[in-house]
Image 1 (cartoon, rainbow over the protein chains, first blue to last red):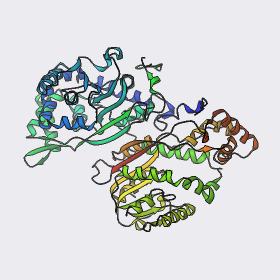
Image 2 (cartoon, chains in turn yellow, brown):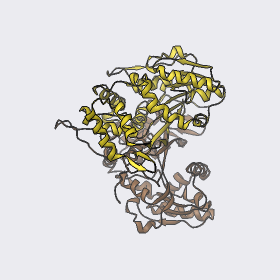
Image 3 (tube, one colour):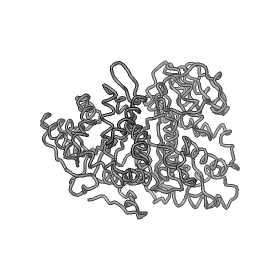
Image 4 (tube, rainbow over the protein chains, first blue to last red):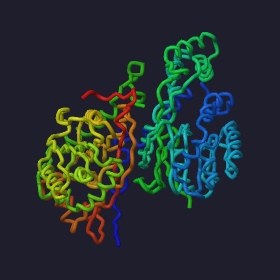
Length: 325
Length: 302
């Protein structure tokens, strides 16, 4: 029998102790927000919603790779070790990379996917694999309430979908609706296209191209929230290979919103100098690393995440997110 | 993402502070820690009986943890292994028992002696001892590269970047660092009562999140597995806890001991095993493949 006295020093041994300058417990969440804000300020770049509603763009930069790597979904989903019948939430499902194989294995899957183009691909993928029993919520994670999700999930997955501006709030909501394990997948190193944009955007449009926050910031945000997660590094993308310099110019003319012949010439000159000819193809940059970050609820967390401090976007106000029932 | 966040706006143009932000943070925290403990009584590390009690006390408990760690590191039997800060041989000896060729770096003569004693008791193959601090070990001391380089709770160094680069350089396989992910329980006690006793804030060790970021900064993209901390130490009485922390807390007067006593009376929990610090501490196993480093790796030359 334990007789445990309440211990005031037992609360939090300063999570993320070494991370937050001046002990600001919201430092990394704010850094994340600032970088996303910088993106909003890039003139003419557009936002995620526009990007993911653009069928042509999605097919050019996303589906192309998927066709090549089809069949890996099953292995990836199996690696998560999700038991049959588990309740699974997949945030930013895309074409169903995790949702479809998990549903096919007998999991009860809820998929959150705001892009209509992606939902079409998801529907097709569901039919193809006879995994039609997936509840699809056609909205952004920011706009989904915990109430409408129902019973807590055994597994929550967010794979390359952490584009939220208020990352702390998005993560707290995942924790709130999870009774098991949360799995996050995100860029460990910036993908090659980010470097291209960083290099070329100033030349074409002036100003800076900020890029996305990477997994190191994500991990710091989790530490700040008192969540100590495991992290595994893997290769996310092999270097992109283009059949010709022209095809790279074509893809990036779209990505970089370039309209004039002079702009195209800039891009062509750039690729002529940075692409490496290997065999029949032209290779861009090195491999992109990805991080798989995961933790089990109540296991490696120190302070109870039931009362995760969340700063409402842009303010210093904290509020406690309480777990339902 | 380093170098994108801490910029100096004074000149109007953003200045890239460079690739040592976290390394500098580690250094600053270590220096603050050293400063706050400069008057500390160092006798603990020279007290043979104390060390044996503390580190060999329950060999079976250590052994089980060591086996788990060795399996977790995936070190193959017969590998060539470098154990930095080997201590009493908690990892070195079981590795030698698995037929590994172990070279142990351990500057404390008391620890080194305990290691040799442990190794002989277990009748494993010999372990080569380098009786130096990791900072002072030379390439000649190390010889051929290692299949695994380990530093388990031993990187109490100011220049962590240099220590890591040296591990990297000595390694042809995987490198492993075990370190505090949160402040250990004893440091939580220190943090809880230091100000009352000394009037200043207690400085703890920099934690594994900082270490992981230092690696990231160096272009080393490491894996991290969270480990549950050790079981707490149990004290037969409050007075035993006061006696142990008397030195750790730099107590010199009866008044300071009294503050400690009051604190423990208020905070220690009790079970049938005795009084214990009621809290949780986590550790981290940080590891990476030292071969095939990326081109953007930027670690210092050693």
